[in-house]
Image 1 (tube, one colour):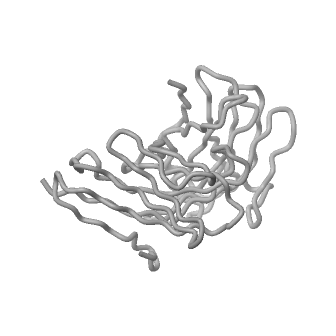
Image 2: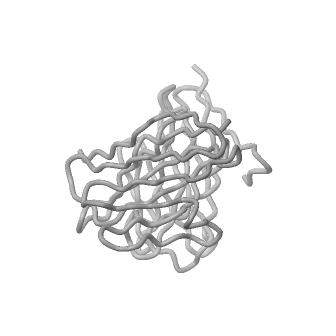
Length: 115
Length: 113
């Protein structure tokens, strides 16, 4: 089946630094990818929609200058958490639907810890 | 039930029993619903979906029921196994795809051997 790969699976960074998370569709093309954030024991919250070749669409309350999204190709979207703070510590998950399909495939998630 | 603060509702069942997990969705205009299973430290895994023109759909050991009148969705798991232990989320979408999903609060299923 279709596979979406996220990297890294875990990252620890210092406050004030930036962290990049990659989301790749391994065996299909995705013009759109979605980034979610999940705090412990809570549900997934959509942060933004990543669009290949155009600007990302951010959900209300999500700072676009803090969470930079780049969808550089049909198989890769990146989320960069800039000037990270401890409150940004969370589980970040991407998903990608196949072009022309309805099912979206989730990555395995990235656990970000900001110290 | 509703989650309070940081505590997920928990359903504890005996191995071999049937499990029923409930979800209230928010948007009466949503036309596509999905159940996901999430194991600790992993991304959500698709279980089963249903469109708003149906009220029941069956898969292997799982059944989803949709009641649009009260905006309620349920997931039934037959003969629950220890491997079913996970957090289960319902999700809704306008437009019939699995992108741009609104996730419910989640229920933790614990299966006792």
